[in-house]
Image (cartoon, rainbow, N blue to C red):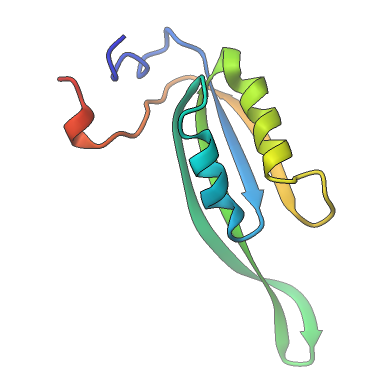
Length: 116
């Protein structure tokens, strides 16, 4: 199948999103890059400020890595389990992961690898 064969609706796909501790996103990205069924994987750093105050005049802030994985639906559960275990999601305060079905999507790839 060509690199662009995954764009259409003929292959069922799932999107796995994980919010993990800072520094874990790149490790997970490298671990999942060649995993079976993974069409695309990306991560970015996120930070935010909450309404809860730590001290008078000082707001609560948090930083996380966000990992986004596009997978073939038949491999989605195994990739989800891998993200959960390698990202230590089950431990208190480490993050969360969720999966959703998507209708269309295509892998991100460098232009020089495209086969058109």
